[in-house]
Structures are given as C-alpha cells and as structure tokens.
Length: 222
Image (tube, rainbow, N blue to C red):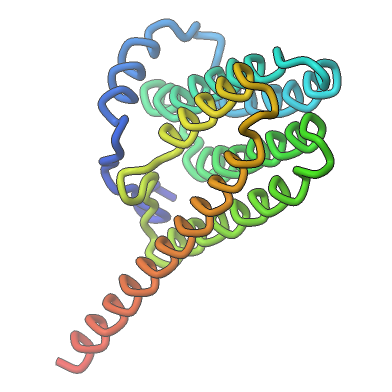
C-alpha cells in the first residue's frame, strides 16, 4: 500500500519550518549508512527511558532541567531525520513509520510527565496530571482527524512539535535558573494554554469536518 493510498500529509507551514528544513538538509548527510530510519525512530525509546532514569538520579538538583532540555533536543534531531532517511534510502516503512513515529512521540511526552512527577514537589502533581491528560486528548483528536480526513497535518495555527519542544526547553531553562520560584505559575499557564489549544483544535476540526460532510452531500445530490 502506498503512502497516498493510506494517509497524505499537508505541506507544513509552522513557524519554525524553515529551521526544520535547513537542519534536515544539513544533518541528513551526517547520518551513517548503518543507521537506518527505524533506528532513529526507536531512539525515542532511549530518550524516554533516560528522562525517567535521570529524573530519579538528579531529583534534587537543578541540573536535571538542563539534562531534560538536552534530551528534548536530541529527540528533536532523531525525530526530524528518521522520515527523511527512510525517504532518501527508500526503506519502504511507510505505515510502520507513521504508526511508530507518532506512538513514540506520545511515549516521549508521557516520559516527560513521569519525569516531572518525580522532580516537582507533590503539591504540583495535579498540574502535571492535568497537562498529561490534556495532551492525551489532543493526541487522540489529532489522530482521529487524520484518520477521518485521510490527511495528516503536522502543524495547526502555525504550531508544530518543533515549537512545542522549543517552549519546553525554554521552560526548563527558566526552572534551572529560578528553581521552584516560578514553577506553579508556569504550570498554571501551561494548563490554560493546553486547554485553549485543544478547544481551538477541536472546534476547528468540527467546522472543517461539518463543511466536508455538507459538500459531499451536495455533490451526491447533484
């Protein structure tokens, strides 16, 4: 089955797309021949495990926030390059790549949640739990829209995983610099942002799918 027969991708137009494209074209030549697309995809399991292990080891040290930021950047690179390596080397793992890539992205997000559960004071756990639940809803909504439309958008309203990773890195740097001083405030802002983002995405999907259904109905009646 070809990729087009299963799920097509819209051209991305997120804010940092030029950076993604530049880094992809520069770094793809540095990937050794023995490292294949599936190796890069599965690296996300390593990054996820590292976050949890390091959170336990450095639970009481601010250095953990820098370590998490480094892992987020490393995961960005492997996630950026896995599909491009597969396309250029004609690996053929289209459906496997789509499923595992996005499933492991979700695993990585959950590992971040577990890491923050370990690091943050117990009084902050409710915020982390709400964020993880909201992200789960968002992930489900994105996948359901992709399956329904047979078209996958890697960004919405100019925001993609790249911008989210950058935001996480910035937040971790703030935590490293200030300790717990701004933690509750930043977590409250994150909860509110996630909630608004999910509502906006679901409302946009509702309008789009309604319009598609009505157009299909008109076409069938003509």
